Image 1 (spheres, one colour):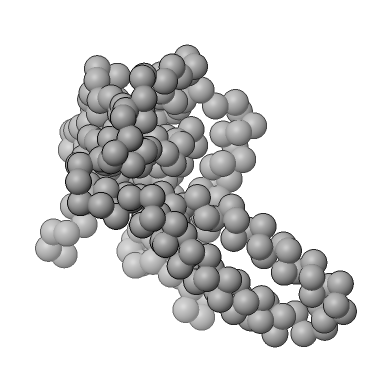
Image 2 (cartoon, rainbow, N blue to C red):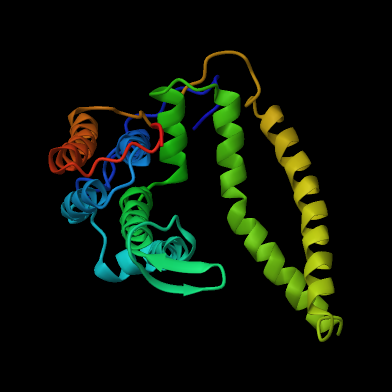
Length: 269
């Protein structure tokens, strides 16, 4: 992105990428919402299972290797079973009880609820992770500013903050090495973590102030319309992804309604 007084650069050619990887990031964000919102309104095995099955077909066009896919989605595969286990042990009991000890009670109803919760976490979280693996922060900021017309000041600030994450990690490692070199990192791990966190907070505030001053000096806070080095396009591919996301939600909900499994969680008990 460039300041308002800078002329727009000619179109920058991007290398060819797989279908999902080349989609505008704001379309990916909207597609994640189209999939997630309907699934949040119901808690049943059928809709979540259908959604996961259809999403697996979409993931084939994400352009990710199997290794990258499993590494990036590993937190989801860990969190989903743990969530299901919690529901199975402490969820609302109904039907035959298979196991009971202290406050834990495993019943037919809690197991069904656990299975539905497990699948729903996968159906909502996996698309959000996979769709955003290939997103570049600058492309996302361009889309938010040019397609969704969000305020440039907000978009630029968010982009700058996101770009600082990598520096924060480097600063943390540098602080750790410095403390070890001074011999103050051998004992008191908890105290050391809090001390490093406070030092990183002070360093972040100073860096943020310098960054804000530099951005103001370069015209990022001006009220005049901005120009952009790269045009953010929203075309047929983006509308196709939105249509696919809407179809996944519609088919999942329709399958649940057709089988009588639809369970509107906001409805009366």
